[in-house]
Image (cartoon, rainbow, N blue to C red):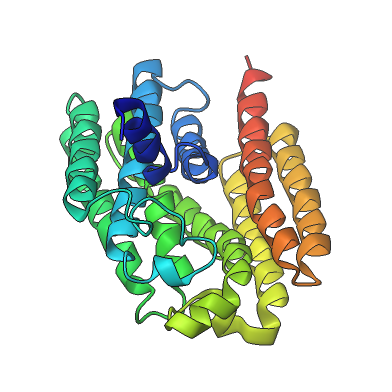
Length: 288
């Protein structure tokens, strides 16, 4: 295998060719960076968090594939991943994950002590998440904590503390992650049942579509409260209204439980996060 071929394999192992995971991790982090500073974040901190998100998401993908290396070959969607297909050795995967995690840690070294402490928790969440699929009926809730932990870290980095509202935002992200990752799990329902993996799609059963929409509703209700509590104005709520309309579109996609449509709905959640962030940014911009 040439060097270029090897780099292409590493790219696929880190899922850089499928950036949806990075985006779903990045949006709530950006919410936290903007809300914690009333729309005037430190741009160096923003750059650190963006780069850290890319690195940690990449590391998380490698860790996930390493832990699931005996399961992925039996799932249609994952059987061609580099580790499952034998294109990368276990040792290579571990070395790559360690390198990415160390680079992410180096990125945040200039930040305050509280942020560094929270980064250790974030790493533990990323490493332990794949194991929750073995025993926890709703691993998507754990994923929501892992994917939303950039929110308290953003507050810590920008203002040196983590107020209650940051944890409330994290709860909103948990609801969102359950919603979009249940759509993702609906794609693999039969394979996950065969290999014994636990997912929200299996736990919710015939109520999966209802559960997705209920989680969307919980997320929106919390974000409305955040907006009222933070004295945000109409652009923020317009962003939430756009997000709600997108969620309605997702219902049309998933109600028939077609695999391709469920996956399309999952990918489309990028625009939900983007709409909310756009509302936050516009709200603060119009105040100046």
